[in-house]
Image (cartoon, rainbow, N blue to C red; front, side, top):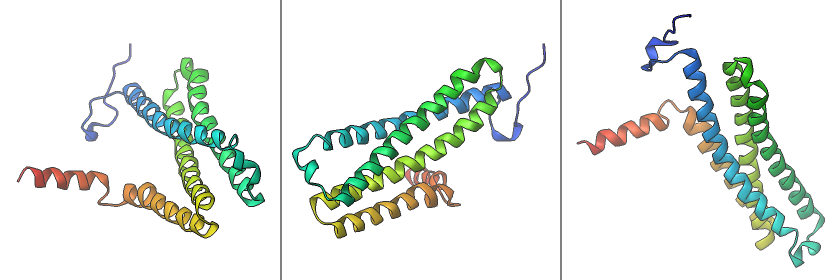
Length: 173
């Protein structure tokens, strides 16, 4: 039997490649659960909209926005399911690191689809309740927030880890 070695002795974890793949797969599943819950809530909302009396009175452009939102909701659901389906199809092949790599990419795309879906829903609701101009402004603000929270903060050299460390340091003073 081959001897198991720490895959990266510098990372502070004593784990083999297989253990790392298992941990990373578990992390991916947790992240998929978060995106799936958000998608289910948004999808449920979108499904109920079509059964409202005023739905038949929506102008053509709002129907287009609605259709795009339903397509994005379906796409995000399918992306999440495809990562799980990939695991089901590949798990006996003993190449979990490859499954983790592919699923990680799928999850990254899923996050973006859900983020765009959320911004689109904001646009749709503000347009429906107020005006198209209000919808566009709210949608742009939502997109700006997405860029800050999904792109800038995670990639910042002083990102969430540094912020959390500063808070701990201040709390211990």
